[in-house]
Image (cartoon, rainbow, N blue to C red; front, side, top):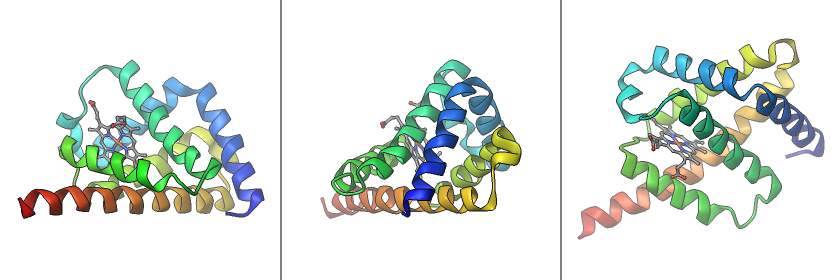
Length: 143
Ligand code: HEM
C-alpha cells in the first residue's frame, strides 16, 4: 500500500482509539442492524465489545506494519473464527459495519481515499482469515 494511504489509516486509527467507546457502540449497533442473526455470537458487555473491536482494528493495522510474516497469524485467527461459528458470508457484514462505523465516527475526515484504503486493508485480512478457516474445515472433513 502506498505510504500516503498507510499514513492516512494510521491517523484515522489514532482518532478511533480516542473515541473507543463511541466507535464500539456504533460498530455493534450497525452490525446487529444489518445482521441481527450474529448477535448471539457476541457475549459480553459493551466494554468487552469495544475491546474486541480494537483488537480487530489492531490486527488490521498490524497488516500495515508487517505485511509479510503475518499470514500465518491471520490464518490462525481465521481458524479460531471458524471455531466461534463464523462463516465466510459473515465477513461482508463485519466489513460493512466497519466502514459505516468509520463514516459515522470520522465524519468529514472519512474521505473517499481513506475509505478505499480501509476497504483494501479489510479485504486483505479477510482473504487470509478465510484461507485459514478453509484449512481447518478441510482438515476436519478429512478425518
Ligand atoms: C478482518 C476481520 C476480522 C478480524 C481482524 C477479527 C479479529 C478478532 C480478534 C483479534 C478477536 C479476539 C479473539 C481471537 O484472537 O481469537 C476476535 C473475536 C471474535 N470475532 Fe472477530 N475478527 C474479524 C471478523 C469477524 C467476523 C466476520 C465475525 C463474524 C461474526 C467475527 C466474530 C468474532 C467473535 C464471535 C469473536 C469472539 C467473541 C467472544 O469471545 O465473545 N469476527 N475477532
